[in-house]
Amino acid sequence: MSDTPDSAVRTYIRHHRTAFLDDLAEWLRIPSVSAQPEHDKDVRRSAEWLSAALKETGFPVTEIWETPGAPAVFAEWPSDDPDAPVVLVYGHHDVQPAAREDGWHSDPFEPEVRDGRMYGRGAADDKGQVFFHTLGVRAHLAATGRTAPAVHLKLLVEGEEESGSPHFRELVEQRADRLAADAVIVSDTGMWDEDTPTVCTGMRGLAECEIELHGPAQDIHSGSFGGAVPNPATALARLVAELHDADGRVAVPGFYDGVAELTDTERALFAQLPFDEERWLRTAASQATAGEAGYSTLERLWARPTAEAASAAATRARAARPSSPRPRW
Image 1 (tube, rainbow, N blue to C red):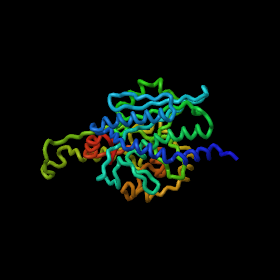
Image 2: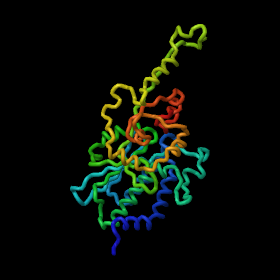
Image 3: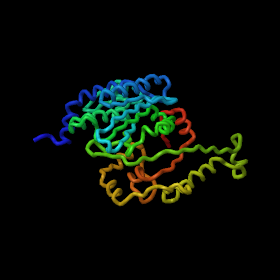
Image 4: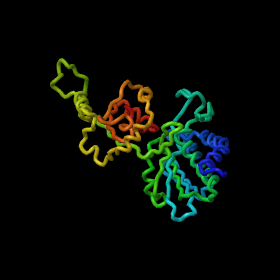
């Protein structure tokens, strides 16, 4: 009996595992840290490496798209079926800074396999995910006997995601005709665990603002002036306290406009996952959960918007580290 398509794919991957990991390790050795100007040439070298690898995989179109910052990589492989849907895969080839003193047990830019896992900066965010598509498409062709993918396949791999994607919107708008697609897959999300197939269907975006409150131009004595002049700390406390109501809902008018409610089916699927809340709390170094009443922790994380307050110190730290644009509190 011949192999089923699924078993044929697994067989192909098993036979090509070593070569795939060797190639990935070569890419991971390029320290494409977009947030550090001294690595600008490395980010470009990473884009050139990927473009060449995609061409070797079989993509007939591979291009390096310039931006005012770091370059992106575009690739396209049309299907033999002119009516096939167009699928665009997004990812990024830049990485966060890394050094041994950050807690690594090995050089982050010299990949190492331990206990069946590859350790190296970018292996899981996002070079590993991006490169898996090259293995996947080759396995797909080998298992089906096709000479082109079953869908019109496009890849867009940017080089500034870890720096907040400052030029990405402009790039997408300028290249909208080349990027047109029926479906977009973001290849920069997580998996539930090694044994649970995972498809991310939505992500929270980010909008932020900075509020400055001013009061007396010098330190003043509460016994002499307290209760008679404005106290910025008191005003800030009131502002933050009014951000949420007693049930944890965001009290900003219009905040939930356009937010899709979870269906009963979605909530049931969330509830089926073996979520260890205590273990999750330890990763946050927190003693308790909190949030919008009526929703589980996973529902709050995956399906509800959030509004958080960060201190000025955290804001300054974030500004000093453009490689970490996500909010911290």
